[in-house]
Amino acid sequence: AQGAFNRADLPGNMLPISREFEFGSEQRFYDLRVPPGKDPARPAPLLLVLHGPSDSASRVEALTGWTDVGNAAGFVVVYPEGVEGFWNDGRSAVGNRAARNNIDDVAYLNEVIARVEKEVRIDPARVYITGLSNGGMMALRYACEESRRVAAVAVSGRSEEHTSELQSPYVIS
Image 1: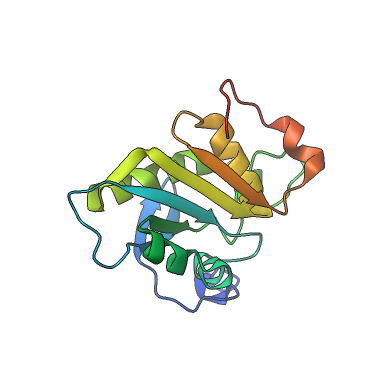
Image 2: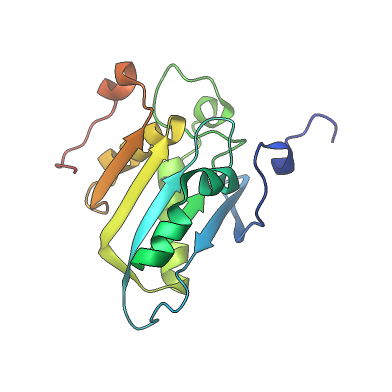
C-alpha cells in the first residue's frame, strides 16, 4: 500500500534480519548474535541493545560494536527493533506510533528473551540491557518494570525530565 511503513526505509538497514515474528498486531524483528564457539551446555550472559529513535537494530549494531565485544567476552547480544524505528518507552509526551498506540514493548522484550532462551542457553541472572536515546528510555522502563530479570542497565542520551515517570518497586543497578 502506498504510504505504508517499510522497514527497509529505515537508516542503516545493512545487515540481514536474524528473526522475525508477529507480536500483537505487529511484525517484530530482532538480530541475534551468538559468540563463535559458544559451549551450548554453558549458560552465557545476554545483552539487549536498543536503538534510538528513527533507527534500526542493524544500525545500532554497526554503531555500537557490541557484537565484537560479545564475541570476545563470550556473551550473547540481541538487537530488538522498535515499531517503525521507535519504542514505547513509557513517556506520556512522546508522539511516535508505538507510544500513541500503547504498544507493549516490555512484553515484546520479554518475548524476545524467551525466544533467545529457546535457541541459546542464557544465564537468567546475567541479563543486561542498554540503549541509546529513546532506546535508553526503553531500557530504563524495562529495567524498572522487570527489575527482577535485569542484572544491570546502561543508558546513553536519555531525557532527564521524563525519568520521574518511571517507577520500580525493586532496586536496579
